[in-house]
Length: 370
Image 1 (cartoon, one colour):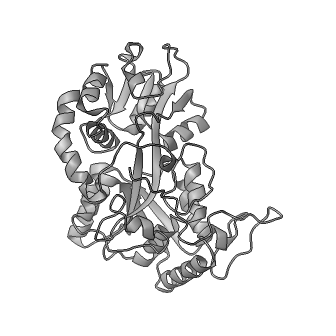
Image 2: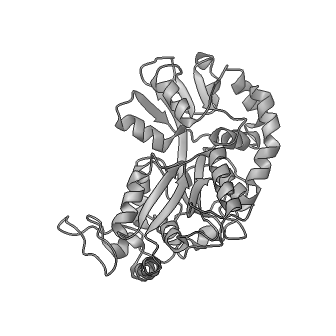
Image 3: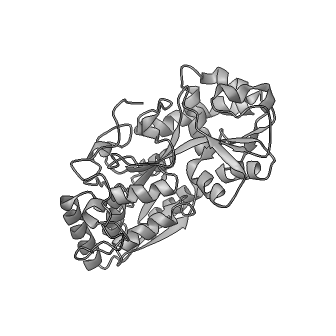
């Protein structure tokens, strides 16, 4: 992981200024009100506010009052979509929950037919890169994310993807079970007390499991030997992250090692008997999420506005409540979890190399986990 911090301010204000009386902040011309959030600070400063006002006016004048977003985040990001609509009340976000291969197929079919419904896609690195590689996204570089869109670890040379959040991962475990230890590191997972009690998302197929296994495989201190030792723990393979969490909630497993912070916060909000530990020793990992504006999208200007807004200070606050860390414009921001940029991470390849490297790793990983 590069040592530079991602929490850039880009010359913009980085903290949300609350109104003194605690009521609604005054609305700027053309923009909507957000309770307790002053527009200039929420959008990143007066200059940024003016640019957002212009983008908003142009989208609405073009009749773009909807932005259709395909993403796996529909269940965990309702607050994010609502906050955008509060700030830009004449544009409604219409999210469609679609994941993995289904998302890829749906976007590909729309592109092939010319009947484009999606205006933007938000998904993980490998899925986003695969779609970008088929020229499905238009070049777009948000003015408030220049450090991201010029960094090969978080962007493509074509300028078609923008990093919008980092979702930290950890070990979600069952507080009802006493197995003699609470796993807090990768080595803890190899303790004999956890044999047969660990579940993980399938590491041999696309998604979070593959992402993690590829990172471990290429880590000098872990590598193939560690994956082999972990597989010897009789790890139970879950089909997806939700099933991994459910196995713990239902008591069928003690720990899900693919725990996503957003899902964990939702579970505890519903009273589930789970906790999370966040491994730091040996490096952690996070799911980075990327937005792409569909090439020739019907509501391209609205999609560009939404993509740009996702890296504003006010959007970072709302995303944090959903378990997603910021990747830009969040200096001095308090988070309810460890920010991925503040802890050691397992080394990641440049974004352009993610898909090819995971494909080359797949046969090795599948051989280990059977």
